[in-house]
Length: 470
Image (cartoon, helix red, strand yellow):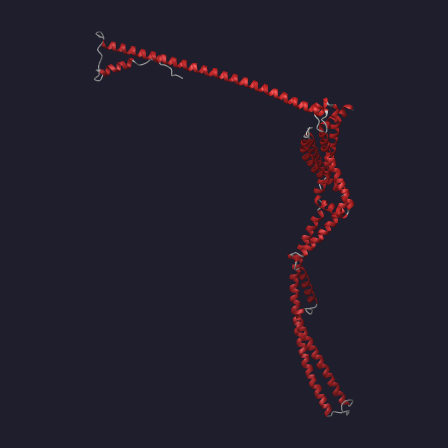
């Protein structure tokens, strides 16, 4: 158990940036590096949770897969934090420490903000979900309003009114058509004229009857002059009534025909307008449905951040809690770098001095090894140069020996040729009494024969050839 704990502690110390060889000599620094390694693991754990929440919120993936992605991100964050720790060595200069620390702290703050954002969103997810529903409803209403004011659908209200008017015209048989107002006015006028004529005729008829009865007028019953006049007036008015009735019937017939035409035309226009209304309404509904589907599925990080910002604007308590929670997560992320930075401002520890001594010793040993390698390389190159020179000298000697042998062989050939020429000349001049006479051709006399004899005797044998110089 103790060995296992020690191995775990050694692993944490190495994770915190410790060198095992130096840590064996400076055991007092072991707890510090073990604590740094533990803090790095804590930041890595927060990074795993943060990325898992972020992937699940942004992509809606399965939780086990989101955890796998979070583990990869946690390993990246731990590696970055360890790089920041390892790169911050102890330095006696405060200025150099600050110059080296500022970019590292800035990078740690960026990592802390990235890690803290998904965690903060997850903590307030219930409030954010409620706010997202309200935001989606507002977005749907705004989009519906924009569709109504869209140029493609700007004629829908007028189209609906026209369809309602056409339906009323069809339902009334054309009577409600506003364009038939003149026709209807003529019918009304003819009706009024007919009513007036009929009333006058009835009055005259009543007067003639009462004149006949003697209940009015002259008061004398019977068919007298007064009755005849009243009767004539009543008959004349009857003709007026008949004429007014004919005109009324004509106006009513004309109005009925106009109403029939208006109803037929309205029915034809109604079919076309209903088709156009159905097309525009279907297109509007399609756009609205597409937006509603996208709007309802919009639950990513961006809209959650916007919802959290709106909640913070309306609720100061929530805004303060959000700020404190974000600072907490960021402080946990920045803590390893801050601890390392504070340690560099203090006096060098035994671990720092041993590490510096090991580094300087390694440099000196490497310099000595480099000098030795250079000396050996120089000696090896000198030996190679000497061997090459000897080889070239031997080649020169061989070439000169072959040249001298060739010159000697050439001189011996020349001497042998001269002796052969002299012997041939002596043989020509000596008497040859015992020799058989040679059959001579016409061209084998004189100087040409002597020249051929000299050339034939001067030919070299194969063994006398001198090899060519190399």
